[in-house]
Image 1 (tube, rainbow, N blue to C red):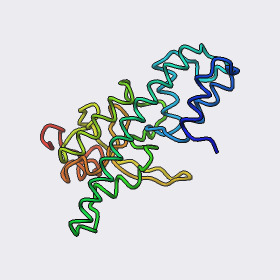
Image 2: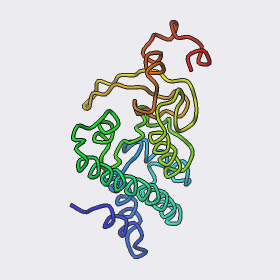
Image 3: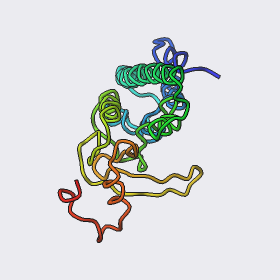
Length: 205
């Protein structure tokens, strides 16, 4: 099975059939899709002016979409390398049991769904790399009371019962599933309350 870099070369091949190059970009999202496959594709199409169902898109727009995806992947790979090095040091020091932060990281290994968007049509508008940088920075600075990507305070608990059952806090502003280690216990407790019982965001911060 072709890897991300091999698929990226196919997208860049100027001699390749445009439909195949578009297909290769979609296949790249099976290897790396920060918002999940459908939401990441919707994001790339919206940012680079590609009609989602266009089988022969403008190759320049296709390459720009790939550039954005590759930049984000480079950010994530650098983060994973740093994470692996930290865990090696911790294990060497005798710290074998991972914490909540590490539980989150294991579920997102490879970067697929790291900033999952439960609604494929609702996602941040910023470049993928910038979103990942904000998320990584927030996770490294301790829990907060707002979305680490858009700074919105509208956080609510959602559940999905599809093929991959999932439950967690979601930002009602930019649409990402916010990693629980990035939020304070108070914010998580507020997110779990029914809407009519939630205190004002400023009071809950």
